[in-house]
Image (tube, rainbow, N blue to C red; front, side, top):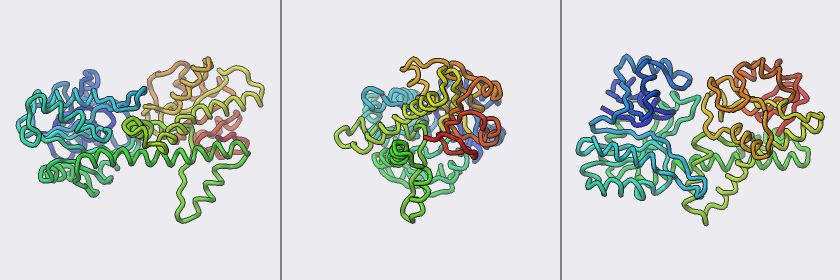
Length: 406
């Protein structure tokens, strides 16, 4: 049996994939409401293909509990936030989960950490936590790091088709865990050392963050001299060795907007490029705020409540709002005493901010300026509703003229 700890965006789909493969799975989470919902057959977030996978896994006997199970294999998929002041990883959730596993696990149990952690976390926090309990690592318990590589909106496909990395002290045990993941993962699974596994995951997201920052800096440069950044990128990308990403209103999610800070926090004297990229991407909500101000001035609109932000999620066609650029923008507005801006997102079913509308038409009727923060398919299919407004399109999806861009 596998006990999967943490039933959020990573843990739950992973648990369901193992259960679908015929493996006995118990998912554990401290949130009793979440566990009760899953026990009642109700999913806690939306994801393409997840409903079907959930039903199949239920028929295969997947269970959910608030209690850690006595077993041989554990997968930890708990939150790993960073401390905003120091930019370092906050390991408290991982440490708590590790101790809870140690309270119940069988001798020789394997503890696999899927949560993204900064390089050296296993050596700095996890090994000492285990050793101070009197356990011998490699005998009483095995520690591994198998970082997740999936993204909301495409989780099921990526669980099956993305390559995986398993970091381990013991290649023999690592290969056994490789066989476990091979029950559903069709792609290559690499067995390596733990530090390499820790670093590789953080580096993947840092690479993307840096490339997004380049596109965002190009957008700022182009804005100062009235150039079309999208045409510039399109033309430059015709070169066979150039692949510039698209600019946007900021970077959100729990990966790209967080993981690079781990490196900045741990290696402050060596991360000049990474820090600059983070600053550029974190500055984009402020840039959007400046563009809103320009449009309001041009059209003599003095009431901020006439501005509507379309999209609360951090990316297209999901309900995940973690670190979303819209929430970052609302925070900037709050800093400037700009209260009353309207907000709508068709995927976010609960009210999480002030002045959030649950009906699209009501939202549109209340505003004169619509800021497209997320390129949901919903807005692409409803262009007729927005074309008569003043539109700031931060995602370059609008198909009509007279649109303001970044």
